[in-house]
Length: 235
Image 1 (cartoon, one colour):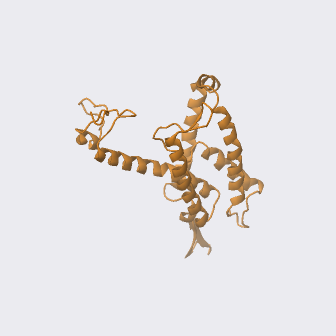
Image 2 (cartoon, rainbow, N blue to C red):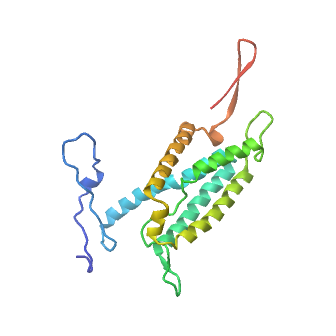
Image 3 (cartoon, helix red, strand yellow):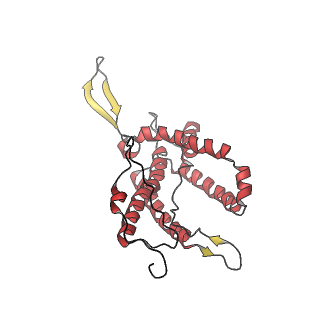
């Protein structure tokens, strides 16, 4: 016992750094479970905290990079979105972990669990599709040669739509879990999550070698083709 609470000072760090390789005959060990009030060694807490921060960092900065690439925003605007995502994530995660009680009500703001409130991947397929339609209908500007120009107006329209939809989510948070499960059964939520991942495959393939933002540039070669034309291409 550590100050009235169970602790595990003799943690097996070899187990922490040993990966579970496939096709091995040895029996896999399950990771130890730490309860809400359990105390863990300081070194283990630092290692797990570093691992958690590195894992959540990619999930926080990736959505603004994808959306800014779909809207063809400038590097300054893209940096602004990434910085805003990190700052807002830190503030909202602190509120989520703190779990503040709403005065004179049975409600709380936050879960009290160590969870990250970051940007969501669920809206990326809808947002990228909406931006493509905005370019097609002329809401977003396009150059004479067909090059898509930065469209902060389209991103602002998507941001405003998200703010309105967030009010619906706030109202749904007051519904009991049983009612939500009846409205959104696994038959609905399962294919929805699957389709989100399938749609993100196209975005991942386009950005695999730097297919958006400043990494996507049009170059012009001095080489002449068979008919005397200049060879152009893109990275």
